[in-house]
Image 1 (cartoon, helix red, strand yellow):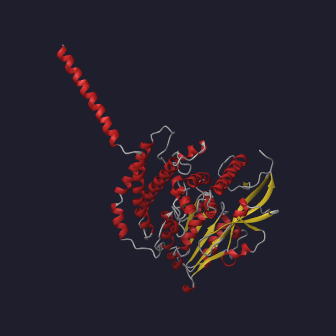
Image 2 (cartoon, helix red, strand yellow):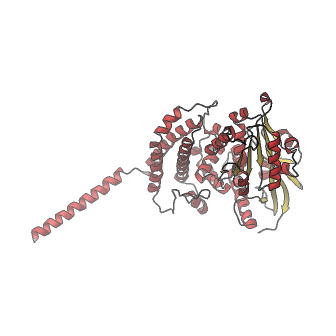
Image 3 (tube, one colour):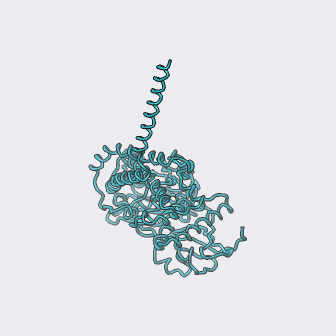
Length: 485
């Protein structure tokens, strides 16, 4: 009996020692959080090299574009993770509500399943390992993509970095862009194509980038060389439309005088729906006055325009939280390394979250932040955005003023009275000099932060497009005194 007992005890002791040794070795071998972050940095650099090289080449293969889109989504997620931990590592004094949004909660922009911080007790090492694992997998799958990429022709321009590249391409919409260009350049084989020009609907909420996507497509060299002229129409152009609409309405965006005449691209940008009889008059005018091979693009927030399309519509959704943050950060910091400014990075992350994926908000505030690179100004800008969102919740019950077709209420950073500015709509003009000479126009900086006191109705120069002919985007505003909450 004693022999058996002794044998059992020896076995238990041996197993216990082995168990403790295994735990010790695992703990000793496990990389620290800092080592994981450095590893993540190196992997992200490899992804960015591939992404930058792909952006410098002409890729028309839809499968490759889809694979590139997956690569970029993982890259954005990785940089988002890196920035979140970077802000924490520098010991930022973050408010409780800000901390909640630093975690990878389910994205407000994309319902797809994501890596998420459920709460602060979750294992950071495990979460980092998930992100690292996803990026390692995507890099392993990229070998064939890189081989095919080397065979793709280079674009005429060669971007030096992402900061310069964002001024030349439509961020995050490569697949949609190539879809539009393929539609525009495709030769129609249908027997009635000459009499019935094809129509491509583009549908998406306000501020998602429909107009910007169309601007980039129309600025494409292949598209400009393909069409004799590009005509643009808005809601105002279609009011009381007659069959002579193509002659006395609209705006000529581009004209290729070397072609003489022929193919025409018609772009119709609407705020909502269009009456069927108005569309019939426009379409009938197009059939009568434009040449064979002409195309029509119609864009709107309303899903109803899909019924006018001759092909499947393009439906734009807001960028994911991680992709929008990457876009916002690059536009804000430019060539400056954001890692050298953790406090500014933390404020910028909050601003990107509150802007909720809106390109219009990014165009305005990234320009303001870049021109005023100090923490006090950035905190004032953050306060303005928070006040706007809070007011919209009280007025409409929704904290998405950047994607509503409703007036937006703004309180200036240096005002404590009950005076509010009301933004009613935005518009664009064809000349940068026209609005500069208008005494009723003020800059967006003076609008939010200045002491200029406009009277009655006035206009605010929000930003100027970087694409020719460099349209100005204006806010139509007035002052209102509202009771305090």
